[in-house]
Length: 212
Image (cartoon, rainbow, N blue to C red; front, side):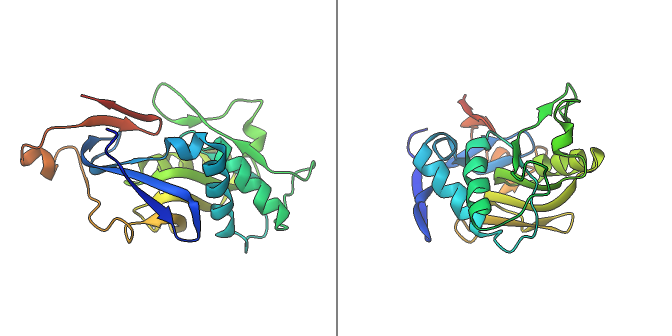
């Protein structure tokens, strides 16, 4: 799985999308590309570049209190929050700084928050940050959770996204299917790759992949 291709974000060459063609199983679908943002999340230089580039997509925002980071995007979220703060984006929090938090998942794979951190969501202006949005399943779970805990969703940011919106909320992304036009996602019971007899290369989720 090291035969990946690198694609640079035109406005910042330190933002890199690595992708590998094949047959991959995700929690919600089968896809023909594995998109790897592991280094984007873990390397300081790449995380900063991604966070600051994403922040530029939200400079017209009025208030952001919390960045809810999915799939291990906390480091990117911290750089994003710093850039937004430097640009003058306000927070209503009493300490005048943004929260950067990540969710917990219960046994039913639902997003939840504990009594000691749900104040970061309740009555807050929440920006959801994700690495890759394909079927929208993870984002839908996050939207439902934020609404349950009485947060106000003000936007969705992604490094890569297939969709342009979910539940009428725009998804602002650095890379889209314009960059990867033949990207395809199939439901598990109607996968064209399976029907063609193409073997599965790996099982993937927001943390990485495991080859078969």
